[in-house]
Amino acid sequence: MTSSSSAGPDSLLRRNLGEWRIALVAWRLLVLQTAHPVVAAGMARYSTYRAHPWRRVEHTMDSGRRLFFSDRDGLRREVARLERTHRRIRGTDRQGAPFTAEDPEVRAWVLVTLYESITAMRELSGDPFTPGELDRLYGEFRAVCAEFSLPDGVLPPTAADVPGYVERTIRERLEYGPEVRYLLFEMLRQAPRPRRLRRVGPLWPLLRALIARTMLALTVADLPPAFRERFGIPRTRSAALLSWALHHGMRQTMTRLPDRLRYRTPPTGTAPVTPPAAESTTPAARRIPRPRLPGRPDARRARLDAFFRQVLDQTGDGYIDASDLQAMAHNICWPLELPAEREAEVYAAFDTWWQHIRAAMDTDHDGHVSRAEFVQAMLAGVDRDPDYLDRGLHIALRAFFHAADTDGDGHLCADEYRAVFGGSRVHPAEVNHGFRQLDVDGDGRITLEEFVRAFTDFFTARTDTAAGSYLLGRP
Image 1 (cartoon, rainbow, N blue to C red):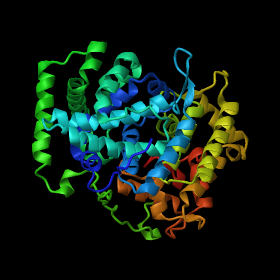
Image 2 (cartoon, rainbow, N blue to C red):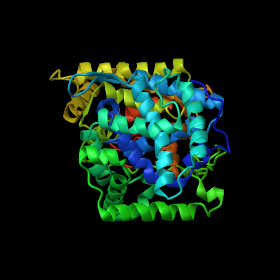
Image 3 (cartoon, rainbow, N blue to C red):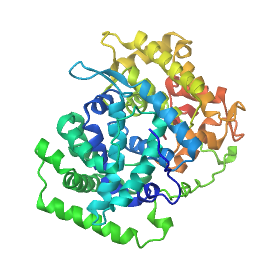
Image 4 (cartoon, rainbow, N blue to C red):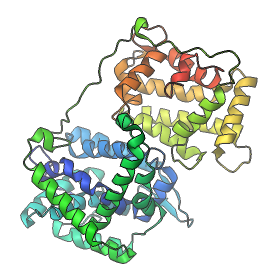
């Protein structure tokens, strides 16, 4: 697959994909992708979208930015990273059929739906591309896709062939399974409040219900007619009116704004960055944990319960297994763009931790560990064996630390800490507070010993006076 086109700052691809209004078709895109049975099987087995929806959305946006707004080297790094990730996504679906994310037909569908969503955004706003613009856009798109080394013939050859390809795939291959229904009817209704919306507070349930209802109506109205027809999803008159008003209104608004307000990611590929507010990391600025009063119960059980729910159970099914630990490794590696060998070390360390968890905690030998099994076994393990954490958790932590220590100086500075514990989903004040708690000697950097000690305290300290008890926020 070759193309002479490329996605540059003046490309149609960047100018349309980078607009804020692409968010109007984002849920439609997810539904079309997830309706492919292989994508659905991979999501059911490996994805964190149920337990951590906002982080999952953020990762998807980050990947798109790296693919379509990077230079050639950045694009190739992202493709290589995605390919390493996809090699690990394989198994059997609910019917016992094998699946793999490396299937070229599946990868082609996921890529084409992104292109198709850009064209749908323009059509729905009453400003469709001309045939010449479609040819140019598709040429730029295929230039990016060429880096995936897909077999010849797996992608539609021209822009004019895309609509037929999409309709055939919808009618012959897609399924309206549990994952699609969850995206449409449940995910937004259950989504936790994003941490950056902390000020919304008790109003979040009402706001969430309004967002969910609006996105459901908009997505159903905007889905391709072949999809709605095949699966019997009606497009109501009110939903059609909502779609018209939102798409046309956003087009009229966005096209009148300056580029700094119009684009989520500018066509140059350089997104505006607002640095987190600087906070002192000197000992005098550190908050001292409030001591526990005598007679208070052992605090470990509540912390372990929270750790299971918020950290370990990445897939949100109430259990942990190998896929959850793999997802944790993935989320560590994702923002760091590690070379393949260092990424493999992180995955191997977390697999070692999983093997230790399974051997010690899977008491009914069903291949996964429940929350009750985890809490009980962890308490028993740390109480009877001082080296219990060394054989699992500490191995993963050391790999985590060395991956985050990107300059290799043996310490985590504040920026390195933010790279793996922060991001747009976490308020900067929370990240800075966590850094201060782990930086025991207050020298503005975290050593491996401080890092491991904090996590050890979290699992072993009977009170909330230890710095490590603050890893998931203030106790």
